[in-house]
Length: 272
Ligand SMILES: C[S@@+](CC[C@H](N)C(=O)[O-])C[C@H]1O[C@@H](n2cnc3c(N)ncnc32)[C@H](O)[C@@H]1O
Image 1 (cartoon, rainbow, N blue to C red):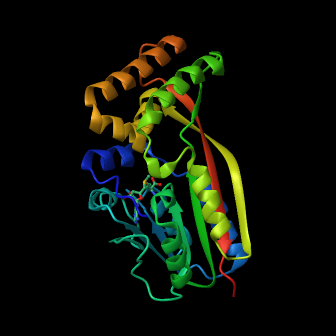
Image 2 (spheres, rainbow, N blue to C red; image 1 turned 180 degrees about the horizontal axis):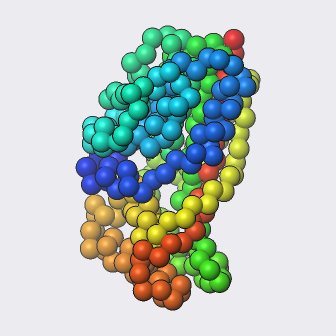
């Protein structure tokens, strides 16, 4: 079953501002493609591209990159990027991609594949990939951690954990308790023998505290609460921000913190 979310304009704008696809992981994907099929980097398709942050990072490595998404609001945001000339976008479901059989060298999905219909998507990937073409799916868990100066990590992360716990009841039922389980199940059902799973890769980012809060606010669970009870959602965010600032002994939410994001991903190559 495919799930339609991320359709609101405000959500798309927040997405564009706060979500980051790490260059380290793009490098890993590109190295994998180059190792598996040297000199075959013509067409990459970034499915569920959202506002295109990951899509444009693929641009230097492929002749052509197409970002696809079901959400017109997200694609509208993607078009406001400084898109390199070899990047374009298409509105379509992940399960019905507008490409000919065997036309694509890389299919990627960044923080999106957990929303797709697993079976239909994997069949569609197999249809559009050329023999030897690659698939790269990555995402991250919600339980990001914070570091700031000498403040014990346990203090900051205790506050973050309270934030995540308050959002748990608003998590979309499709996600179950862990989105990593969805990726792991997808990995198991991918029929390609040449595939690798990486369960945990911590990526550190320096961000203003407000950026960390903004990132959590883009999660579907926060959006669920926002829809049900906007003032409660706002209070929860503000309380968390104030508790963190007080623990950090700072007065500005623009104070830079280190955010640790826990990624998981898998890569596979279609047999020749
Ligand atoms: C969490 S966002 C990720 C966006 C972007 N890839 C990133 O890294 O930030 C998930 C995106 O997947 C899209 N999406 C969800 N289900 C989809 C489907 N079945 N087909 C195509 N796109 C879908 C949503 O519209 C949304 O833009």
